[in-house]
Image 1 (tube, rainbow, N blue to C red):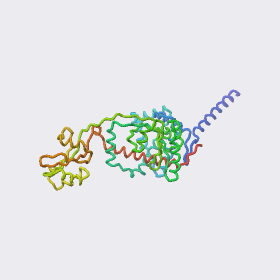
Image 2: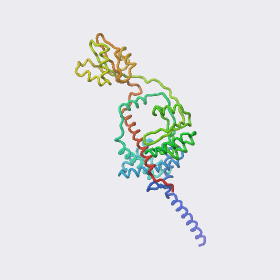
Image 3: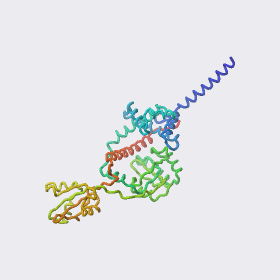
Image 4: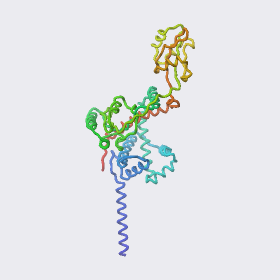
Length: 398
């Protein structure tokens, strides 16, 4: 009996310790407005990040991502938005497809990494409702012009220039008082020299989604940045920080971590779109007068509307198939510029360049590029909205 009492006592101690551990695991450690995050959730998110190959301090990253998701879900629920079971299943399928596997195998891999299905579903749910909220609030503000698509297509074809490796620190500036405080802080932080010190400042002050990663962002072409920031970056040494940059309702600092040149080469022109407006008995001055009345190739149709059809010719041809004198005149023109250098007998010809297609642009899906630009704008709005949610939230370590 005495021995049995000792054994039962030992079992009771072990059971009590296990219950205490379980209680500690599920105890709240962070309050986010009127919800909490538990130690168990942070542990689960660390395991998920590790399984997905995330870099950096996974503990800090797990904490920051869970806070963001709580705020995103709260904002979505306030608008009556919710994810359906089918939407969550579709989200899981999408993640599995990125890993080139089936949803069943993907969840099995996560399970072996110690990630529960329930935790992954909550992760997917937060992403779904946040995207829906961002679309509902900001989609009507997104405007992508044809010129922006043209620039993106041209940029996709560029194989030269420079690219930079940066870290970002974003401070809110939603009103005059907040902007003044953030501007003063940004000026002080812009004197930081060293990647570790800057990363520490990012984790302490930044409102961006890259906060958990010390502000690190991947390689970007320097042409992606506005001219004034580009000029700063080209004159900086790794470790230096830019002057504060005002962008919408935020103030940004960027630290240069690396810069490298990319060899440039001229893209091959595979087709030229041009117009010939023919003026029988005309002189260069007549052609120049017509040129002064039009801005684009399409405007020539209005000029030729009541004239014989052979007065206006518009073609898209390979350079080798264009008459030599026309090709030579087009060579020095930019889009929608004109030339009066070509004449056929007594007919003066007004040439107008409508556009060039390079080898890099062939097969480019303009609709896809437009969607990418739209998503970039939406992501910018989303970052600003999340920064506002963070600034207004009650976030307390318990």
